[in-house]
Length: 455
Image (cartoon, rainbow, N blue to C red; front, side, top):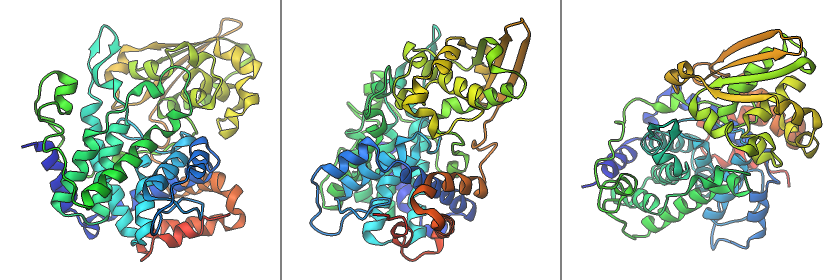
């Protein structure tokens, strides 16, 4: 028996929307509202444009597409929504990735059935719990001669696909057999490579998890209509553990019980989660010095942050927003020069700015063993600056705004919502925010999504 598969199935099938604690409902509501804002600001992203151009019409009711009256199949709506939520790299952060990518599929499905808002929120909460536990396992790594190895070659889409299937199964009230099959199919066909996030990043980086959510929707549709799936996708022969470790064995998932979703965070700045702390450090430094006098900047941080956002040559010469928002030297340089990092940081003009390029070349990123020892429990950077006259300045930034130790509250999210949704909704922005925040009390979640349609 595949204990991991049974463990996930038991959890997904046992939770009821009324069982979700109020603090979890409130937290998940913030995630949903934040994700809607991210999607609304990215309606013209490459993934959304591709989805709109590909004929994929449903035979019956289609999936809900955020900010649009377009008609699409559930799978295409899931891809479309997730592409928008993900594109700006402004959505949430949690164990091993961005579980709000899952919301694209859950919104498509819940909207197509006109389900109550609390049912949608319950599906999100359940999906996050599954995502967290799969991510803990698949993001395991060891330190070997200063390099991260093993599971880091597998992208977060693996956990996204499994958690999406679990969330849909819960939202639609699947029985145990349907739930088990949906999760099994999503796991068996869900090993995406992290090559999508290496080197000069392409458009696919922004839609990689969207592809995973579309696959998960299909897995659920197959399960709903009686198709059976592999019995041991995680722990059996040729399952996940054998593929990753050379022999079959237990998945050893963290037990379900405590609501881990409460430890998820949101992003204050439009940049990868790894880089948020670098921006805060840069803003602290800027308050103490003239950026024009900087001779050298040394960023001391964890091995993971350096590996992901400060080790490749492309991170010092980004030509696309996909690379720039994953580049620690780029966002630090922009923050030092401009005193902020907004969506304007990724225009062609800023990407080619001689001032930004010149300052980036003065930035180095090194591993600090003390910081490494405290990662990932504490997210931090020690930034040391040497000025032209030899003067040194140093700041030590910890736990950036948005992380669970320093969370964004409802009003923080409202400000972000205004910034991202305001250009589309104008004076109606605040009323739509309030409606979305009250979605738990709605008998039909589409009442919120219909207010987002602008054309």
